[in-house]
Image (cartoon, rainbow, N blue to C red; front, side):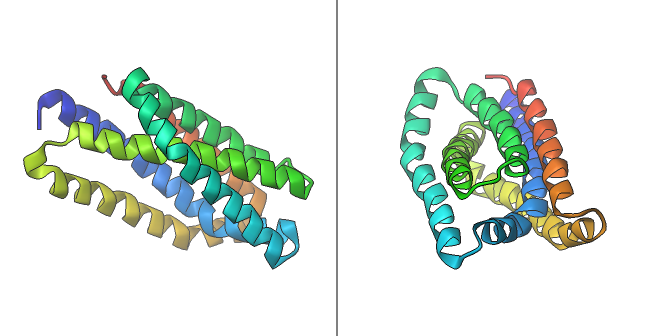
Length: 183
């Protein structure tokens, strides 16, 4: 890997490792929160479906415009927006607000996932792309798994809303590191 690409890869790996850890703390309990908030399995399915549908519709546009505008700005915006979305979950009080938040969450996740994947392709060389991306996903996946196991302890001690604030803080910090990536 070229020196600049290696540097960018390491920054992306560190940033998204922090993000993966944060989302690992959050995801199992976010699902419980969504289900409890809607008070029915139907509203749970609908809210998750809204998020996935909006995400799938946005990925094409995220990729297309990142080719024109650049990837870093999209990754920064998605990180800061994700921070706000996580906090917003603690503030909502109606099912319609949940549905709107789920749509916005899906759009933002689409941007983040598309940029992450695209930047991995940008920073890795063809001859070692598979091993570098494999290493990247092994590290981020292991951290997410470890966080999932530990998240229950945090919630048990501090309550479910506290995990949202911890996760938002970690996502914010992970996003700050993206500023160090050189286009």
